[in-house]
Image 1: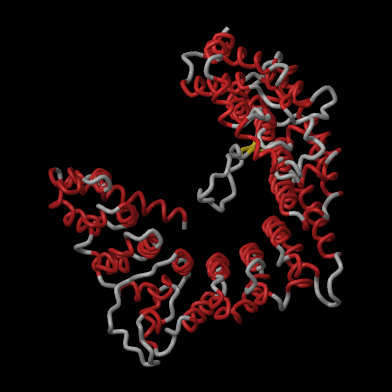
Image 2 (image 1 turned 180 degrees about the vertical axis):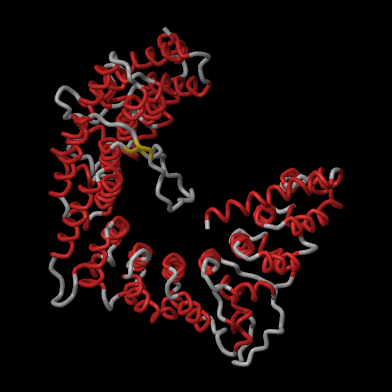
Length: 612
C-alpha cells in the first residue's frame, strides 16, 4: 500500500533528479562511463540501461530511507512498512543492491526484517545456483548489502529459541552456506577484489560466530583509529563449524596471494584473528602453515626470506598479525632462526619497524624478551634519530610489563637525551622525554656544561613522548621522573595538565605516587586548581588526583576551589568538578562532608589492600 502511494508521489520529480546524479546512464554519467570503458570492456553491452535501476525506483528508495529515519510507533507499523518495501524489491533485488541509493536503503532495512525475509533477499541476489553472488559481492554497492544480510544471522541465533523459527533460520543458514560455496569456487578472485574481499572477511566472522561493528564507508579526511574493533560472540549452527574449516582450507591453497596482494593479506589477517578467538587449535595449525610457506620462499643465500617480507607493505601486516597471535615456541623459532642479529636494522626500516614493535610486545611475557632487549638497546640512539619512536615506546612498555631491564633502559634514555652526565642534568629528564628533544636543543645550550638554571617554559609535548613517560611511570624505580616533575613551575604544571598528551603524564605520575610524593606535587599545583577545573583536560586530571588523594589533600583542594564558586558553577567543565567533589556540602555541612570523605578513603584503602 505505502509503496504504491509513494511511487505515485514520486512520478513528477524523480526523473530529473536521477539524471543529475548520472546513475541511470544519462547526462552526467557519460564521462564516468568513458573512464570505466577499458575496465569493463566485456561487460559494456550488458551494463547499459538495462542493468541500472530506473529513476523512479531510485526516488522511491530515497523516500524509504527518509521514512526509516523518522522511526515507527510500534512493531506492527514497522513490519508492515518493511513488508511493503521488500515487495517492491522483489524481482529486482540485484539492481537495487547495486544502486547507491538502493544499497544504502537495503542496508538499513535488513536489520528490521525477519530472518525469512533476509533469506529471500539473499536467495534472489544469489540466483538459482548461487552463482550471481559473485557479481553482487564484487560490486561497490552490492557488497555492502550482502555483508549486511549475512550479518543478520547473529541476531536470530541468539534471540530465537522457538521451534517455528528453525525453518526460517535454516533458509538464511542455507544462503550463507551457498555464498561460502561460491567464495570457495572463486577464491582467488574474491580475496583480491577490493569489494569482494570485504564480503569474505564478513563471512569468516559469521562462520566463526563473532562479529564486529558494521563496516562504514571511509570518508576523506576522517581520522582512523588504529584499534582492533570490539568483537561480540554468538551461537552458530553446526554447519558453520564445518564450513569455516573448508573455507580456511581453500584460503590456504591461495596463501601465495597473502604476501603479494595487500587486499588478500587483509583477508588472511581476518581469518587468523577469527580462528584465534573461536578455534584456537585450527589457528595454531594455520599460523604454522603460513610461517612454513613464508620461510620456504627462495631468497639470497644465507638470508632469511622473512627479512624481505618484513620490509613489504602487504606481507609485513600479515606477519604483524602472526606475531600477535603466536604462541611461545613460534616466537622463539622466529627470533632464533630468522631475526637474530637483524633487529636494529629492521627497527630502522620504515615498514619493518612495526613488526619489530609487535614482537617486542608479544615477547614481554617470556624470557625471550631479555634477548630482544639486549639486541635493540644497542641501537636506541639510531632508532631515535630516524624517528621510529614506536619501537622505543614499546621497548619501555615491555620493560614495565616484564619488570626486567628497567634500570638499563632508563640509563640508556638519559644518555640518548644527553642528560646522564653531569648528574645535575637528571632533573631535566621529564621535559626532554615528553618533547623528545635532547638537552642542548631543549635548553638552547651549545656547551656541554649547559646551565639548567635557565628556565624554559614547557613546550612541544608530543604523543610518543607522553606514551614513553607513561610507560616509565609504571617502573618500580621512578624517583628520577618525580624529582624532575617537582622542578617544573606551577605554570608548567598547568600547561601539562591542559595538554592533550601531557595531561596523561601528569595523571600517571600523581596517581602512582605515594601519599607523601603526591603531597609534594600537589603543593606545587596550589593556586592552579581553579584554572585546572575550568579546562577540558585539566578537570579530568583534577578528578583523577582527587580519587587517589588522602582526606587532608582533598580538604586543601576543596578550600582553594570554594571561594570561586560562581566561576566554577557556571563553567561547562568545572560544574562537574563542583558536583563530584560535593563542594556545596563542604561549604555548608563540613562535618558531614568530612565523614563521607573519610568513609570513601577507608573503602579505597581496603580495596587496594585486597588487590595487593
